[in-house]
Amino acid sequence: MNFFAVGGEDEQGNPGRLTVLDMPGYGHKSRTEWGQEIMKYLTGRRQLSRTFVLVDSLHGPKQSDVALIQALQESAISHQVVLSKVDRILFPKGRVTKEILESNANVLQIQAENIKARLDTMEAVGPKALGEIVACSAISSLGRGRLLGINNLRWAVLKATGLTITRRDPMALDMDNGKREGAEPATLRYTAS
Picture 1 (cartoon, one colour):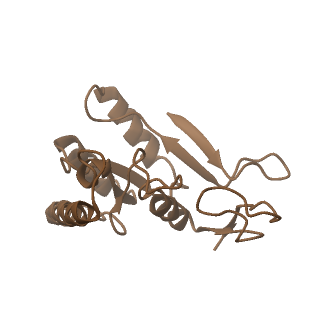
Picture 2 (cartoon, rainbow, N blue to C red):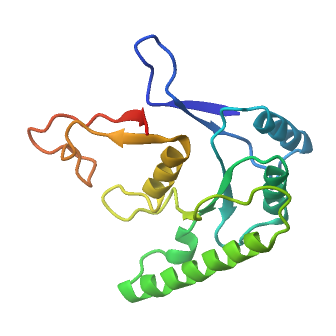
């Protein structure tokens, strides 16, 4: 398991209020004992706000995804589905025209609706997945350094934890991740909402 404290440390050296935990996969090449340890860890965390379950957008929920979601429901662990690798649907052969992108966006929308319908028809023993399905890609860019859907995923994480972002100067960063000339650097402060 890999832990990432977000927001840096406070004046006393305590880690940020938000900790992201990356856990080993439960699909191909996973081990049974990993799943047992993951569930033991998740069920023992009172401060856990939400678990994000990554589902391959091209293939939809696999048997292992369904089993994990059912285990989260049975344990009453808050969870949300994230469709990963959406670039494989939107940009299957690299560069595309506006028309192809619009068509592929419709295909992605239908795939997301089908996945949501499948998840909604699962027999729930506990609470179902929260919020909307977030779609993203860690590879494909929308230009200017913006990864597809990553800001939506960030927002879902912050919303789940009850944190908000404030900036000293909202114009300090532009879409190129560059600085506006003469602007004070942007500071991200995480505050409870």
